[in-house]
Amino acid sequence: MSSDSEDAINEAELLLCCGSGCCNVTLYTTAPQCIGCSGKVEACCCVERFCCKLGTAPLLCDKPMDSMCQLGIGCCSIGCRKPRTCCMEQAQLCCYVVNMALPPTDEVPCTLAVCGLVCFPTVGCCKTFGEIIPMTAIIVQQPVVQHQPIGAPMQKIAS
Image 1: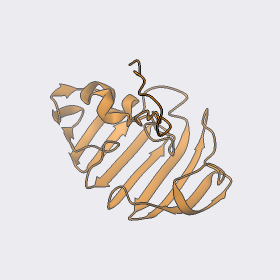
Image 2 (image 1 turned 135 degrees about the vertical axis):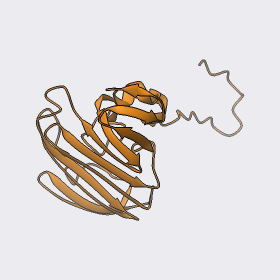
Image 3 (image 1 turned 30 degrees about the vertical axis):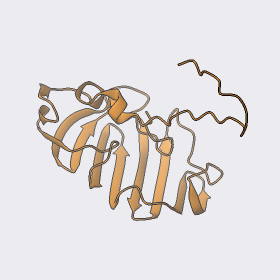
Image 4 (image 1 turned 30 degrees about the horizontal axis):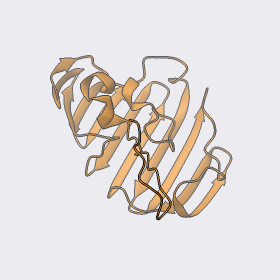
């Protein structure tokens, strides 16, 4: 993914090693995603993020964050936004990724795993989030809204 266009971590490719409810430790097993560092911290309405990673655009201040205010320098940015969760952290250093969200979110789901043996939300061994959780739960897709002018005849929309 990024499931969230505001971070540089593709959660679907992360191999779940350990998970204890709202926290988990995962590994990137493919290059170039595992080269570099990135992170995102949200606490109520405050957001801080950074990225210094191969094959990823820097998180600059001109990248909108649905924010009321935002400041960015180089590969870091800080800003305010409408809260999505009470607190969340996602940090990557090379192949090592740590996630935490309270309460858990679609991006950082509730998990229970030890040494690669996953017990919740499904049972498996050495599985990625993409294999454990259906991709629709990980990748948050925005619905396509088509507007019609007032007074215009109704048209059938192909799906």
